[in-house]
Length: 87
Image 1 (cartoon, one colour):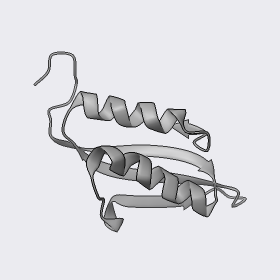
Image 2 (image 1 turned 30 degrees about the vertical axis):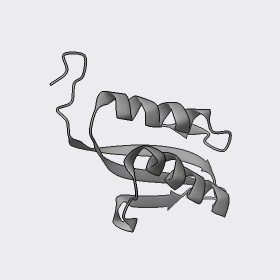
Image 3 (image 1 turned 60 degrees about the horizontal axis):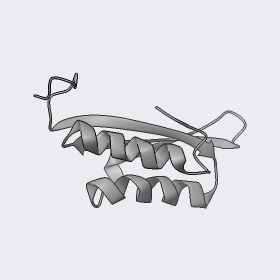
Image 4 (image 1 turned 135 degrees about the horizontal axis):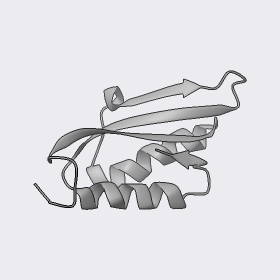
């Protein structure tokens, strides 16, 4: 285990992204993560609409291989204009 990480890799790790509910947002979030993980199953992706239906929260659960992989995913996700917040 890397001394700088609180996780033991590989591990299951949820990545949550929020943005406006558009078809482009859903496909963009999947593509951003798959760039670092390879193809994801549909079961790895959950979405929840806001009460007013204007925003959506997408949670993608990945099998993270390293802290560097997670850092790279978050860097790309946070840099995308359509992603309003990532957790």
